[in-house]
Amino acid sequence: MSKLETNTIDTVSGTSNLTIGSSNASTITLKSGATLTNFPDNTPYFYGELASNQTISRGAFTKVTGLTQNELDSASAFDGTTFTVPSGQGGKYYLEGVVTGDYQSIGEDGENTVVLIRKNSSYIKSAKIQQGGTQNMREVTVTASGIFTLSASDTIELYAYLLDASGGTADVQSDRTSLMGYKIIGA
Image (cartoon, rainbow, N blue to C red; front, side):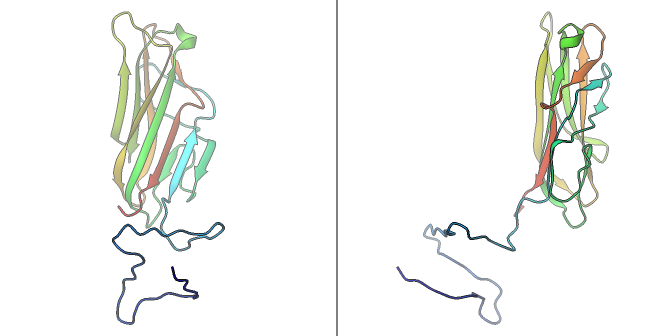
């Protein structure tokens, strides 16, 4: 093993690629306390959980607002309701929306819970759990996720749809309802 001590490694004049390691399963290890700079990461990213229960009108798609608990926002692009892709940050994004329908206060007779992710006011991904016959739900969590191409200024929002047998309005449960996403590097 050899030791190379230097302050800068650069390409040969007239070339633009620098290769470290070989195709024989090279491993590059950073010592504890060392940091990498100017390397891409999964930003922008955002995350927010529903801060308090939100009542949803029966059988209507409703925008989930107040996703401000445990909020993370690397680019100041998420206001707790809407994520707006920052300028120059278009690309592939992983998005995930989670809705927990809480039917406890209306007789524990939930029948249909839907989560919907919308891009620029149009649906791009949904997931649903529906019960039939005499089966009813007290609480149910539904997750929709996927990888999507987003452009600068595109908006992402979370919607919920809840339906119960008694005709009452149910709640989207705080702490267990969230919206998140991040840009995928190298995609």
